[in-house]
Image (cartoon, rainbow, N blue to C red):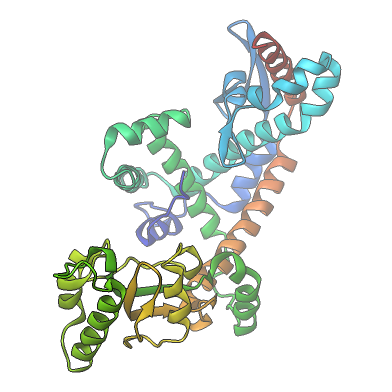
Length: 382
């Protein structure tokens, strides 16, 4: 799922505390006292074990069904550890799979704690704004599938969600992000050196651009020319036609109209305009166009290009060389990257503090319970 984007209105609501009397919802000292007394308790329920964190329950099924991205696909712990379960006894399996399951459990716990602290900090009047923002995120998600709600629902189902759980996840994420934003120091300026260093660090991943050309083409194919004399040299006729058309273009005739009239190519009805392509992607005989484009400036019409079965007249519309988007064009993106890293730093520190201050109780037993359940399920699916 895409990262949740929240509005400045929500940020203002959160930082203001959303309280009618103008008082903050809870001081940092009070929040810290809550963390110090927060317990993660292990409870027996329905023949199994669950963790209870501040009144919210974490079940083994939630842990087992938590997807992890692997090679671009979402995969559950059962699917991930199936080969290991088949070749190991239980104790070997628990030793090798423990760290992965511990991380899932820890992420669940910290997510609940951060959400509870964020809600305490936000106050009472945040819910309506969060509902509107989450509804907007759902609309954008559906629009990403062309407005097809059935396809959007299918994608949500792959992630173990429906529309309501999607909105709840968005609201929780927004509230946590807002809480993190409230803990950031916005009076700390971003220096020019930081911007340049960040740009150089991320430019290969985010700002690299490949070579690309956009052109119009009159594609004369000798075999398709109408001739009165079957013995007439069609290739010579095609070259003559190309020379005539080139002269007309130099006299001011419209390239697109001539392409519609004389081209045999696949885009003649569009005035010979090809979609933008990477030069190296053009297959023979159109690869000849790529070489000519390197020697041609945008707006120019090249001399006819001749192959065995084609005579091309090419007008270069746009050309982009291999390189990077200039810094001055992406400066705002670089600023957002720096702010994102700062938010991540704040999140990490908050999360570490919460996990240190929280009494984890018998969480290790819950991890063991989840591992044993994953082991049994994996071996049953042989």
